Image 1 (cartoon, rainbow, N blue to C red):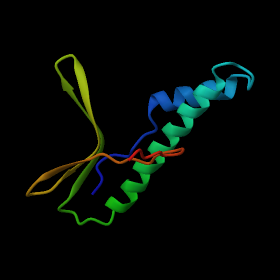
Image 2: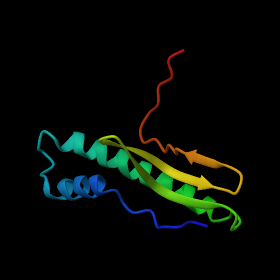
Image 3: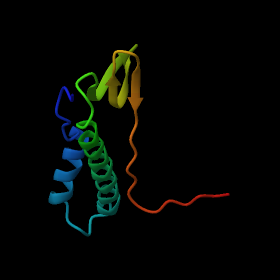
Length: 103
């Protein structure tokens, strides 16, 4: 059971809005475009994970985008999966672009 709806991160919303307003020839446009594409890829990957979690029984509880304060900073988890027997932190990666593996 998923307890809350995953929302689009505010940073991604800001970059998306900035991208629509910025002219294509601006020097920062390629960098903002790249960040926005990576952000959407990550968000879509987390939404895909949410879909698969809907097939779990009611004994599982999934909490997306969990933020816990630690001292003066925050600890963020993509999804926290709770069961009667254990807790599982799920960090999902949906990478946009090209990966290079150096042997």
